[in-house]
Length: 337
Image (cartoon, rainbow, N blue to C red; front, side, top):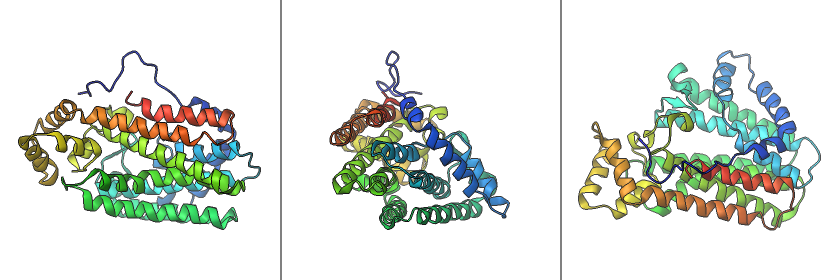
């Protein structure tokens, strides 16, 4: 079950090895800090936290924080602390998301909620958020604290926005964009912006770094949305078609609804609004998404955002960090290229 035109048999996929190598020394410190701060005398807390922390995530967001710190010549340990805070925020969001979405899989493993229950997952997520904010305070930058705390509030708003848009086939592109900006792009943007802030590089540099993160976040989420209808479970870390079965209205569906016949619209409404999904419906959904060009155009939109992210780097200092960040954009898009 694949997506026509998305997977290339000859193209060599981009990687993030350059970014990984660039920040490897700092990431060791981040990982040590993450493990120490995930500890607790309450046995269940580190058990659940380690289940997700050790499950093989790429830790792209904290690597972005470290790369921008290196780009701006930051000297100190604040970037390590903030990178760990960013990863804790992300991990907490995953724990909460899986409860809201009733997901069974996360990063190729059973979701924490399936092993320990919804209540424990939510509460451990809250604990990790608390630890994230404690670490932010240790950096002694009120503005960095504001940037990340604002992102945390926006992410929560995004969850509520998505609840309102779920199973609503009248959702527009503008409404969808608000959801992914809040749920995904806001944390990417904040992860990038805090480094020029603690390096005292001024508003212009901060704005450029934030713009890069925001556009990359859009691209990243759009690729995820396309992969849900044509990726592989091993790549997604969840089951293919989860968005479909959860009634999520993503950009591929919005495009397909706009372009489809009345019969097609009735199909989407039955499956996504009414939750009446029959055997073979996912395969039919993928066929409609390919026939209408919805998947291909979603990927093209992701490429457009990726190009905007790279353009945002233009005014920033040249060097290994800039090159690694460009390659990170290519990597995000190449998952479906």
